[in-house]
Length: 93
Image 1 (cartoon, rainbow, N blue to C red):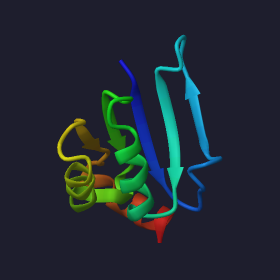
Image 2: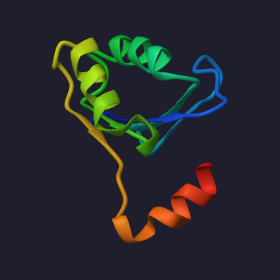
Image 3: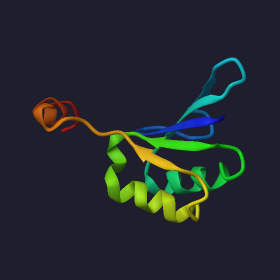
């Protein structure tokens, strides 16, 4: 199984990517924005078995990735407990 985690920030997906695991079966890819994430996700059709998105994408971004990949790859996204909202707000504000 090939697992891909996409993280959003000041990244270039051509160089900001790293595969790990015995068969490079887990990969992290950095993208700058949702549009780049959609392009990267489309390129993973037939290669990746699942895509997980960082929390910056939220549900709306996950839905756009699902649409961009025509629902051909399962897409999940990271979330956190409401009790930690203040910590996340401080970190990402």
